[in-house]
View 1 (cartoon, rainbow over the protein chains, first blue to last red):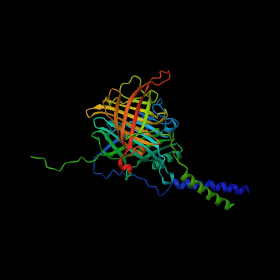
View 2 (view 1 turned 120 degrees about the vertical axis):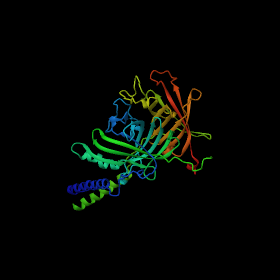
View 3 (view 1 turned 120 degrees about the horizontal axis):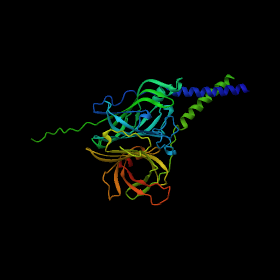
View 4 (view 1 turned 180 degrees about the vertical axis):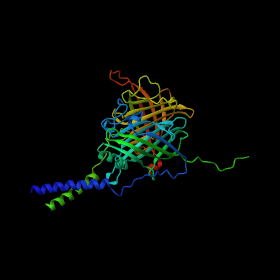
Length: 235
Length: 190
């Protein structure tokens, strides 16, 4: 009798492992590596920032997560309504590495997360100010499934509790129909514009203890074409 | 015994798939919305941030007492006329329901005062305020864009400083009160 119970328990564990394996290596989940904005003819604004918490101006979360808040004395988001939320303030640089602005990012785990569909979703917004140019608001849903698959899981499997390599991937997964985020311009040259944006990560190092160590985030914002009147000017 | 093993595998598969499908991975904590319906004015909701308790960041150059302690605000001349602040946001029951950023700046491209509210269980709102203060007491603004609950909404927001009137020793110095009044756009109603 006890042999039958042992076999049953072993079978249940095996069944659970098969489900976990099938979900993790789900062949129907595809990775989006090409930016939907790669083929646009419109002007693009590129803003980069370091994803490492210690490189941020401030980074805060519930204080019990893997990545520690920075600076250490920053107020933590320990309240029940904020426990799944992080807030980061970063210096933003252009593609030449020049400081151009400040970006505030709020990110919360999304209730639309679906492991079966390969969706590890985060609802995030950016509040960006670029002096002498203007301000922007970006809303997006990010999917970290590929990131977890290619970086976090290998780091946990590694004997050194870290991952090193080269990984480049888009994390923006919506709400735009092509997997882009939505941008609302606030002031300056961005005033009134409604356009699309994509956020990508370029990762080189990740540790279990500190999270992202060498990782750059890149925001690509499409600027709508300036309307040009075709009416001839009166002579 | 083989039969038990096969039954076990089947049970494990069913249990695993059922758990993944039905058990929510993320379940955000929610507070009851405290909304007042105003005649022809949409849904009015008031948020506030207690000062200094709810202040997470004062991002401005040359602060004698930086918030948070240990903050290294970029010394770049580019940010000389900008001020970035982060707050926890409370409802009228004084319960924290979200987080907010406020950016105020002046430059050759004009002045701006903006808020972004982020309520994890409800959505986010981007609000553009008029830089000038009305009646020396409050500042008006409009909802520019929003997500989820605040998507497809139009409306106004006012910001004002309310000093503490209780005089209690442990009372905050005051609060920044943000009164929102949003209504669905015609497209959203149809």
